[in-house]
Image 1 (cartoon, rainbow, N blue to C red):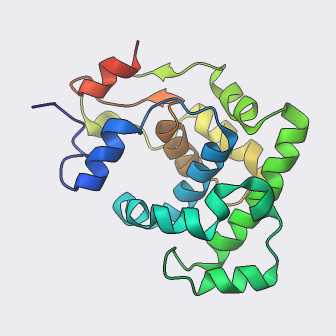
Image 2 (image 1 turned 60 degrees about the vertical axis):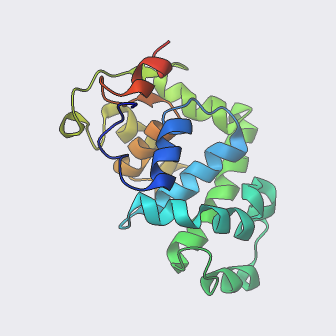
Length: 188
């Protein structure tokens, strides 16, 4: 039996996410935008709730095509506010559209959203060595810097804790605990 991080032991959807995605380096702008959106949507909710709605988010937001989401108008936002496939929080939905516009500006200035985000960790995964979940921080110097810079560029729902969760999800940090089988796989 594989040893996993303690947070990934109950729900099969969470276990699959842990085993196959969480902490794996992501360098595709579309997928980075997806994770930014999902981490923002998760604020105040459980990650399990978001994972269960992930396919709904993909359908509702054109598979996170940045240009398409950036073109959403008030009518589209009104449709999304009543869409049961996603979290129907107007501020979170509007932030996704605004964040798509901000991603386009970042792409113009940095060549890609990937280049911009990964610069916060000098283009290399930070390899942590936590013994237990209680050792994991909720934010770091890097996530605070990222949060501040994203906010300055007009991004919303990008506080330091959300940014750190994003960093964990997309492999900018390896926060699998030392005893987890994924820690070793991702530290190579």
